[in-house]
Image (cartoon, rainbow, N blue to C red; front, side, top):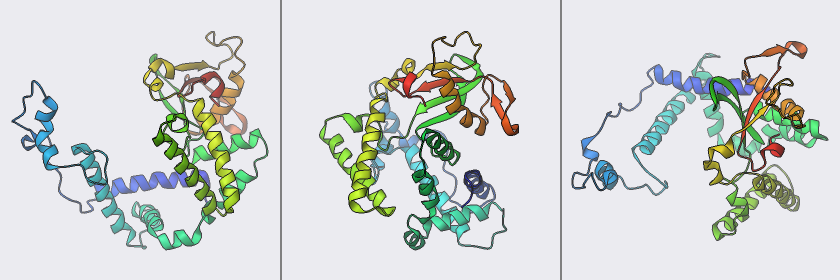
Length: 324
């Protein structure tokens, strides 16, 4: 099994490969016209009373929402067209297995061909992820959970939180870590707690889906249902500690700054969460090359360690206790 770093690197190369294939002139459909298209305009509508109908009416009338979509617009149509172009490129590239090793076409063609080989996928079952499952089963303590979270982040699985580098909302000259709530299996908090029929139905279907996933991984039916119930109960507790969609519209509820430098005057003297937060977030900041406060110090084994860390937390109902 390839290391997480190798997998992440290969995925990055696939993305670049598709872009390079486009740049290399792989045949695709002709470019669409740009600018305002007069044919889209409904000249019968009064732009002073309904500008949306005036600007888009003719296009919407000629392009009803497809049965497989829940919305439709020129932007969405362009997105679907671009997906079709990418599919055509990958189909063409994956039809050959003699691309030079390390070329742009080789990883993209190999990945796409492996993905589309449904017979082999069905035959392998959960075998490709078994090493990961074995590591998860071997976890015995909190330290093991933390190590697994780091490993999952290394391959792009941002659970139970996400982290990225971006400007400080209060000082755009600084780049800081933004940590946000993540990892729920359903879209948001409401799906786990609201009593409306559609949410109840979604919960029932989600529990069944999780049980099926355990079954596909080789778990017996009764045990799979028990494991699914455990997963759902855990996620429900995490959803309870998350902000709902209305609260997420309030920027103040998504802006919880944490200063970790021991000598930073903005750090509350009574804040005992800081060491734990710094220990949990620092590995991700280092691996993703996030620059915090512009200061680094030499760390163990030659690795750069962060002397100070500024963290902006969002998405949690109780940010001081659920960040890590």
